[in-house]
Length: 396
Ligand code: 3PG
Image (cartoon, rainbow, N blue to C red; front, side):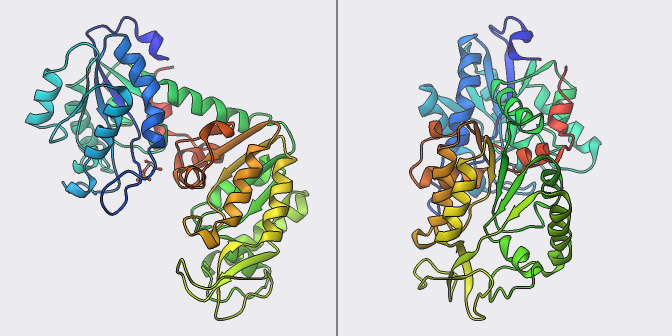
């Protein structure tokens, strides 16, 4: 169901799950507000319909305890700026302050509960505990709108259990995200290339397995590439290596060979002696990383080869930076991949908070890509073909 199916919302209390899990710097300032901006259209629509909007969201992983470091205050303030309206943040999640803030809402107003992960029940494995908390959330709304695409893979009280207690609908962001990912999984225009980066291959095993059946080409960079290079028998020096995954990766390389899929690995690597922004960078062959060096980016030849493969594809999905993109000396690979994605004649999708933040920090505009997904884990799990609890629970 869509928001339109919820009928006349004037005066109705609408409980909305958003994903406002944005990166903060050491001073608590938001460094990338993409997820907050992405939540604005649905909230604006609800306000314009005269709804009394109650936003639920999390920030970081406070693990069931109240910790001011994870307060939603910066997100509430930024959301208020973007909406051009005050967003009153409750001091608690389901306590007296939340009750008062919700009770004080007028038509078109927006309130926000504090970080739902302050409550131990939110992420509990015990369904009864989650349901008990979800009942308290449900007291704050007449209907529930699920618009936090980045958390739909989590079976948590504010994502899953609350939807079982109230009439509900998917918000516009969730609908748009699902539509794009559906296009990637259902007859993508070919060639279909996937670019995978990020630190750990162990986080992406299931998606790699699935992509080896749906995509034509898999381009691998980021920290995970060293486990691939090790699987080919190359030395990786002090680079990040997941020894326990080498055998699995060897299996992927053999599988690709057998099925005619291409797994493209870098041929050169930017290395440095230390994991530091100003550590002296040099470029070495990917099959000869010296013992005392660690790889921090794909090299310029690889960046050019990756860019050529990307820009000649009709469908491209990208998740994970190619190197330590926040340090200029090691941002070249990520920059080249981002630029190539902007040149795709077809559908280009940037998935995941880290990749999205990286491309914005490098100066690319959101509108240069086909779609920037707000979901990291969620979009990967969708591509794995997994059932996503936060989507499955919604009324059809
Ligand atoms: C994300 O950052 O991908 C989402 O907000 C989910 O956060 P989580 O991985 O802590 O559940």
